[in-house]
Length: 175
Image (cartoon, rainbow, N blue to C red; front, top):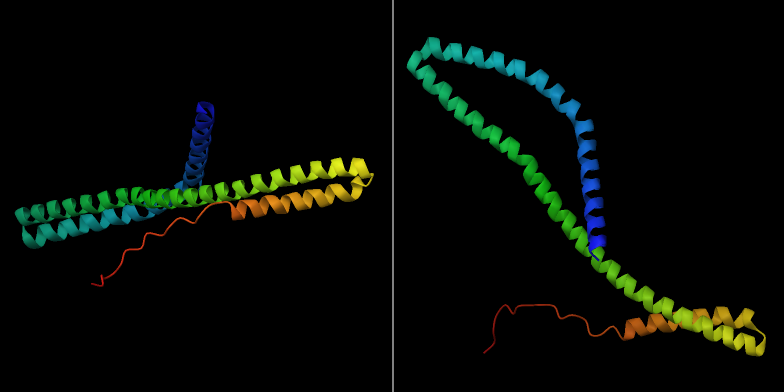
């Protein structure tokens, strides 16, 4: 069981690294191009703004405004850097939800398939035995497989147990 978990972890990491590499190859040039266009204009605008502050308000006020602008810029950059983490966290939650649903569906379908295939196997074996005895295996084997599969499916549906109760809270009490 430990080898299966290790294999799953390796496959999961391989898929993650593949997606990361794809995103870097596809989005890397776009981001670099956008930055190379925006940053020079932002620097020129900052220099003009700083010169305007210096001329109109004086050295002390200009320095105070520049510090406030810098702290605001740092706050915005922190939010921008944190945004991909929030996006990946939401993606992780969605992925875990999808995995749980797929896992539950797989267990349910797997249980049905095991019962159905087991019934088909038993029905096929009975068809072979009857066909060998009465020399009509061509007819008895397919009918035995179909009948056994239907019996297995019916057994799974009828014997799976009661449905899980849904937790419903009463809205008000009558008393």
